[in-house]
Image 1 (cartoon, one colour):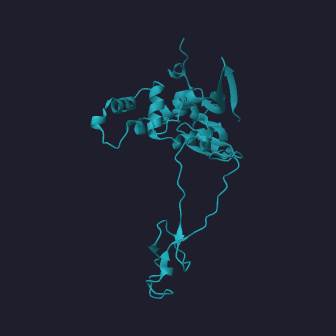
Image 2 (spheres, rainbow, N blue to C red):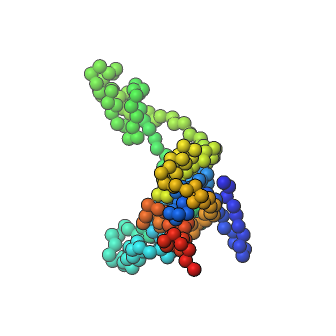
Image 3 (cartoon, rainbow, N blue to C red):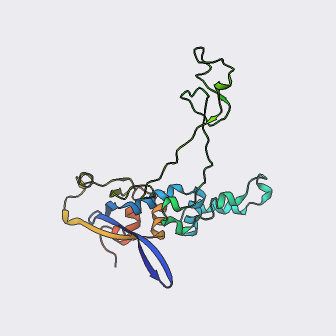
Length: 253
């Protein structure tokens, strides 16, 4: 399920595909079949500071009162804020997070850059490590330990050489070799025939009521899913089944 790029009036919109399995009689998405690209996009949202989420939803015009919270902070003057606080840190915690970032792979998105973490052991090489240099080794302080309690060998100030871990060649969060299933409440599991059968069992009596539908996912759809996920346990149904299809099971004209 590769990403597709559609050109429209000198702009390019990147989308991914999502296959929905719909119960037409109940007007409900039973589950969806997805590949790495879409699952990574969903998990990508977890990288986002909530301030960025709130701003994106507000800019997209979604309802709710989170926009009032943003606007309230923006309206406050410096007189009301603690001197070392800036509104920008809360309103736009990472300014590079924009709508287009929603379709980036997680490792390509802006995020906090962790500092190098140093670990230390004692001179006796006991199996204890700490990230605070000059800490006394707990095993060295025991009566049976080699050396005296005050020995320099008992102090944990020998830096541990750490290996650089090479990330998965696929990049992102999940592996490309597997397919995945999503339920209406955005629960993600590895795909299997047994899982699909379990989701259908007892929920649909007429196989003819099943409809398979492939939809395109772009930044707008990701925002809609994000908004729906905060309001309902039927996020897929809310976003991808038009309202007229859910009124008494009939089409409105």
